[in-house]
Length: 308
Ligand code: R2B
Ligand code: URA
Image (cartoon, rainbow, N blue to C red; front, side):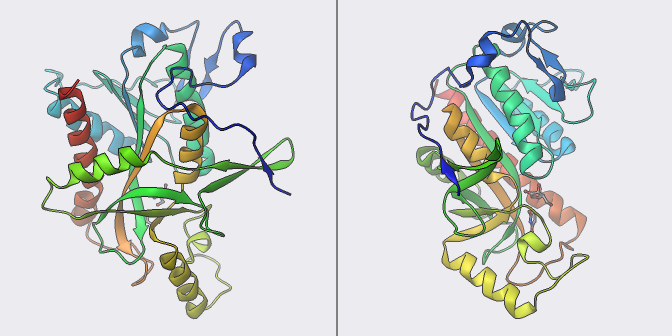
């Protein structure tokens, strides 16, 4: 039986992002996967000014994002060098320009969960306050045109389409909420109106454990269902108000909820899954699509910093 955890964090913006009494008693906290530690690094000095953390799957995209942010904020490095702060590990990359941190999260729920635990602890050790976290990524659209940017209303599970995330802890299934910040989603949608070259919609996002069978594809190495089974499932998905499918949103949203961080998920649809499974658009087209969530989020961050 799935267990529901008692108290969820309601205080978004609170500086106390970690909820772990054991951390206090530790002499040192080494954030192994990002190669940073409370003894080896002066985390408040390095990260104390962080206000936005943007997470995305690919290392290259997160480097491109920090370059875009640097341009938007007029903080370009004259040598155009943006050092990877996580040098020394090849698990994730991290770049920083002013109050913006750009971090890769790899693919899938476990990879996202590991780096997000360490980022939340990093924000805690650095004594950061009022931080907003945004996942910028790719997805498969459900009934939306390829290239459409989807701002997630809710991150939902692939069985009941409810805003929940199930995690096995101490051999028991624990159910966590995945409610995202609706105000932040609306602000992002508002900001998207300045981009006439692409469409942005708000809708639910299904988070799956796999790209192939988990997303009802017919082109994996194994497939034991028919095309009709696939279409019946995708129809049910669409009827649940879902606009896209990806692989990290529920754990991301559940960790935002637990920590009290304001969070949003902004993913471009690379294809419309109602029309096929293969991602075979030309490279330049896919590059253009992947740039769209970055453009939107960079513009949002710029506006937020201007009004402060
Ligand atoms: C979107 O794209 C990746 C799979 O191709 C996965 O990380 C995701 O959520
Ligand atoms: N990412 C996914 O998880 N699914 C897709 O169909 C495309 C990108």
